[in-house]
Amino acid sequence: ETGVTQTPRHLVMGMTNKKSLKCEQHLGHNAMYWYKQSAKKPLELMFVYNFKEQTENNSVPSRFSPECPNSSHLFLHLHTLQPEDSALYLCASSQARDILSYNSPLHFGNGTRLTVT
Amino acid sequence: GQNIDQPTEMTATEGAIVQINCTYQTSGFNGLFWYQQHAGEAPTFLSYNVLDGLEEKGRFSSFLSRSKGYSYLLLKELQMKDSASYLCAVREGQNFVFGPGTRLSVLP
Image (cartoon, rainbow over all chains, first blue to last red; front, top):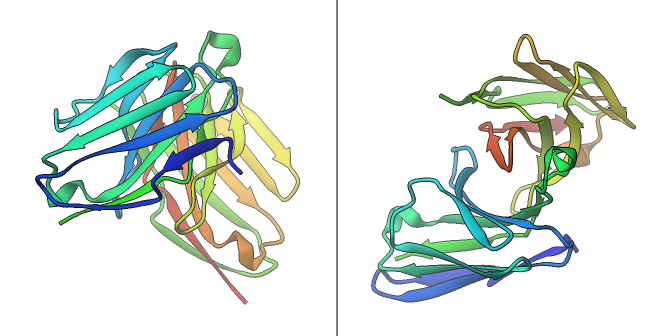
């Protein structure tokens, strides 16, 4: 149990489908993140939310649409994806209130393995 | 720009000591984190350094030199279960920038 729960664990979708990834954290953190992990590439930051406000959009294509209704829940809505979007999508949370909380690490969920056909 | 480098792969023998290096050039710095990631699993937090020097945590130690933009993770008394990828990450405010990871294989 990591304190950060992601569903589904695996997802196969066609390029014309619409699906959503869900993330929930039970750690009382105020910041939530989406990362993409592809084979042989570093973890890529996609989006950051702090107190429900989006504070980072790392030049992510509009076919990925995040939603953060509250500090505990984060969604990633997917539509008209491409095969190169197949990857492991990791959600994470952290404390990021001020410099005194900067020793707080990221806590990751187990990820959603996405395959786009 | 941001650049974090790590060796791609390392191999070591059970019971030995291994040092995994990380060099970084980032626009900001609020600490350096090491994570362990087993295949098919989430990364898990190992250590944190923000001041120069060595932090020890059981079999694992991490070192930081801010002036050199350099860190290493030291694993002692290696066990088979230590076979995993080790990720170095720099915190810049609320953001974390990750290196490519080092895949460590521990052989019997």
